[in-house]
Image (tube, rainbow, N blue to C red; front, side):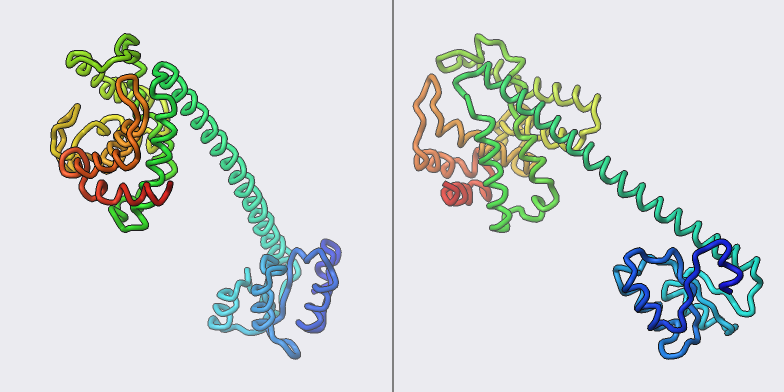
Length: 333
């Protein structure tokens, strides 16, 4: 066999599997192929391939079995242990060389495919990071744009995102709507919450920047920021593949002013007709408004705000969320 291959390959022969292992241990570069006899002194071929495939250093070396046996059970066992092929003795040199050539070609293609997969993974990872960075940049820019038009609510977007994060993680720990929350990408949801007031971009300055409390007519115009926001998200969705992120944002834009008792706007949804994202954003949005200064009111204390939220748990807010909200927020302070 060595004589049939030596003109093409560098061939090293070993009298036993034990000697083969000694050779492998002494050489840093593994061989491209191992031709392994089934019947050998000491360790047989099946024991040897088990050791090879169980060793991280050698498990990827292709193995061809040599055997004079001609039974299907032994052949199946060898292939099941990881051998690429069986070569029966006595062999024809030309066929032996062709079988080895094909095995090395398969191994080369596997290595190339592994390299391409690893390279593709790295490319995709970098692209994902680029998309994420772009999304975060766009979000922060839009948030700054919204808040630059309404100085009196400065920091509202970042504060509500933080409070929403604390609330969701606290609810999961307390097993409140945990099954529903486990299905969402929390980080993506928190990011998308920064768009909940994006429709305010379309509200005229004389209303958005008014220093006094809005009249009933002005408030009706202000309420339209929800529909404006939905239209903005819909336009973006038509031009991008970021569907999950924008779907979260759309729900919160459209429903964060709905109320548990059905008296909210713009749809007058009742109870659990309001999506969970909207119910969460509603309580977070109101809480931040209560504890923040406005031109027409002073900030309330945390205790005063919690009393208002508690009193509104069957009218404005989902009772299950309003019940645990004070405890979760208090523990985070």
